[in-house]
Image 1: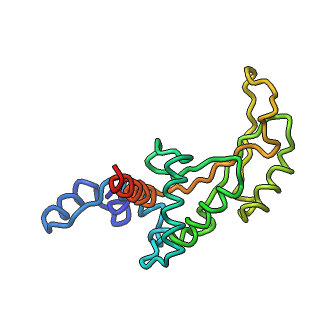
Image 2: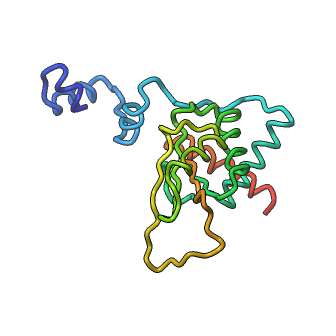
Length: 182
């Protein structure tokens, strides 16, 4: 409403008055922010008709998300793992079932300081088909950590897609599937 008021040189109170008088609905702050961040509409669309293969991919990825994903943040779909094959399957789900635009898929690598960031970025880009410009490498520097054989020289990769509507949809689909079995 503030932007409208500025654009037409009125006070926000005047804009509110006219909207109320003519019964014009106002967006919530979160709806306004979403529209502002996605001026062309949703950066995804869910595939309506799933083939048998698509259905298997869909269900498999819901289970991957349940097991390896993070459901804490309401705005971000996240799944992390060392195994590039698992993450590759999840990216396929995002692209083929959810039609997420490639530029919305981000990768964050958690890496111990003993390993080479450039090699790691190249590795994950090649394995997952994510352009290097969408990959961030964070160095793990917790002094309490001691080198072990479990360390991966390629780090732990986390896929992230920031979209509250897609996150809500995936969470709802997961809960629907869980309720079928419990």
